[in-house]
Length: 213
Length: 213
DNA sequence: TAGATTGTTAATCGATTAACAATC
DNA sequence: TAGATTGTTAATCGATTAACAATC
Image 1 (cartoon, rainbow over the protein chains, first blue to last red):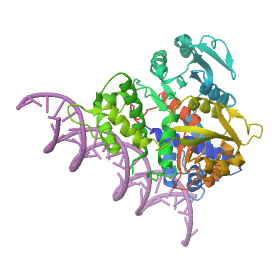
Image 2: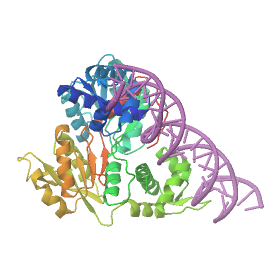
Image 3: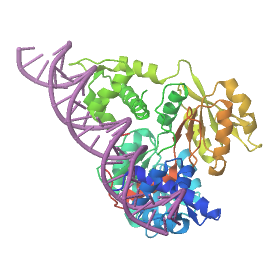
Image 4: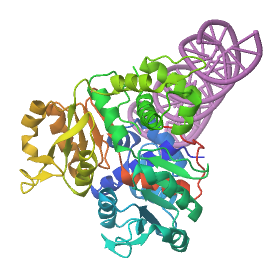
């Protein structure tokens, strides 16, 4: 019911609101929040309606309360386990990045097909053999994964993960995954992104979409 | 003039066409290409009109010729240099990834503010101090960069890069960069993506957008 | 030819923006 | 109150989809 883009922007607002709170602001106006996130103030107001927290004229939005409402919307009720599949260079970089963070979403399991990696711990995260996924994913209550395996293996691994109960995939492999409609896939393809950016950087006309999600 | 999304999809078509060529296909129909990329055949036909190569009824598209046309559209005339800024875990993983590829886009320079990294070579790529960017970027003809610095430094570094002549940024930091309108920014924010995917994986209704860009 | 596919135009759909009454 | 901001509706915009004549 809430569009994906809106969710992405709300995630940005949250980050900006945390900064704002750290700076000591008690309240914030839509145009201020918009400026921080690079969107229009109308968009901020419309997006915030999805959050279910109302601002008031003259005072705008109370930062603390709005932040709580966003947390309530975006965060799981309890800390949620996430897995990373494919412990290569990129996978380990992601483990390092998320390992250092106190988030509601925690990477608690990594998987790799390389048997020499199984049993080891990378950046504080236990690595399992990929064949253990069918057992570990349900037992850890894992619903979402970061998929950092080579392109040639991505589809096969994705099938296996979905069968194990995964319902969300952040896919770093440069292929489109075919998944059932109830599974949410977000593609993060470095190569395509770089090609696209380089294309427009070379001077090809671009739709002037300044700072939107 | 060509929408960003179209460019992204054409990049996907290229990958699928290469696979198709490797399999020995001489020609391909829009619906076949669509199936490989997870888009509709109408979308394929419309996107390919931007490429400037015409298929024919009954035979569809000649794979080899279409591929050449796409290369001509997407690839720079000569090999193009790209920089990576921020040689942390993620930066090094990206260097390793792109280093092993024979692409028209080559990462030929890395930058980091850490003086102990300057002068070293990471995965075959020379690392410079960030203060050298103003000189190296123009001399290497670099137009696009991968930006993998911490969020707190992203805006400052981006300003510096744009001043040095950069016109395209793949931004991995979880902040929105404020850049002049002629600069193309593509955001790759792991945290936001994971939050979004996890949100829908938890069962929140999602717009059923099956496999589109 | 008949049939399937193409390029292209018209209709649809959804998201963004503009406008505005209500509110503090 | 006056003025700025809010929530919300109407208008706009762009992209996707459907439809179809042209083509091999």
